[in-house]
Length: 267
Length: 320
Image (cartoon, rainbow over all chains, first blue to last red; front, side, top):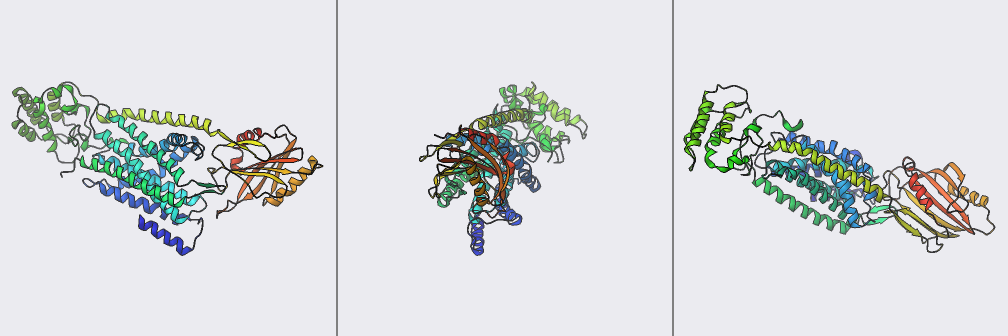
């Protein structure tokens, strides 16, 4: 990922680009796809004991991009998410608004594409599969959203855009992974009310999404002016660094835990 | 990847217990493990029967759920009961295994394994994990939908929240949507007493919705028609591709004034996009020797949706 960002930075330098650079469809697609595929490969490789069929994982990835994201966008518009979530509102208001609009819409649609496709299938046969499939859905979702971010805004600061894409891709994957962890537990765990973890998973992921969104708005895009938002570079990078490490550590821990419970471990 | 994998055969009847708590995969209701039934938890005596059935199941080739259990495997499992197993339950399991051995192999439901389990488990099992997950779908959807609707309603209320702008130099005030970015200009043009520009940072499209308030000092002898002419001449000069749409007399904050709607081309600073067409509404009022102008502009497609908001802003104007 660092190499990817460095490469984009070099391209930006070689182009002599200052300010926002319009990005066409093909370069935009490359910028959005590369981090998503790299993260997908990483998460897929974590399922060492009984890897999932690639076409299932890729299918869920595509559903995340082509089904979950458009539905989430529509729900966000209906819920007037942008009006809710303005940085001039208090932090608590922002987080609540973000949870009730962006968080729920995004995490529920990611959950839905896994729940109503592979979740009850024979291939979903170990706890870690929840994380594998949900991260695939989350990465597909992120791909679609990042592509729009890059191509629809009339140009991006290329390096900043690349960093944003890398981090938000991981963030979407990790929020989805939280739901995936609970989905794996609900399917294979013990206890009378264990299946309610499905609901808990969606709500926890939505809350994480909301907190991340609020922190992002406060720390990365706080440089508002009449010409729109400009990124607060160093503060943004520091936030991204901390967020990436924190979120990734949590998800990696959850993943290890689920892998350890795999029935295929001994074989 | 169709719904729920209802047509997937094999794992629904295979019985590994990955977490040591529940079976790793769902089984038919009649084929539940002993650990899920209270009766079964009472005694370890039923273990051999389960072991028999599971051994039989394990010996099946991996070709689908419809395979018959191997009677030989069941018999072997019964022959080696775990320590502490009662003679009665061993006998029951052996009976079941014998029945399994007599049942002819067929591609249908593994009746022998089911019979062995039923004999060992006694009371009917609770609904399966998958059934409970399916039942909970409704709960998940209902809770998420309720929260989204609640968020939508709250958002509608909070979305109308406003901040107030009060001009320090003229005392004029108005309300604008909360979250908009406003800045008072310090580089005033000749005759200007105040100028403030607000932008909605979250509006979609190539151009953002914007609000401009300008207070200008006019000569004491200026008449209303003179002011109208002054503004009509200024707009085409200030706004590229200016085109007037309509105009009508309308008071502003109880003072006589006029509203004019027009369109013009606009390009966001630092944007490489093609210019957007903005639809604007300018309302002005003349009071004393001051001309108060409030202009709201947004992309032509968004403008009609914004009318309620525009009326609210114009209705909140207070000219001292």
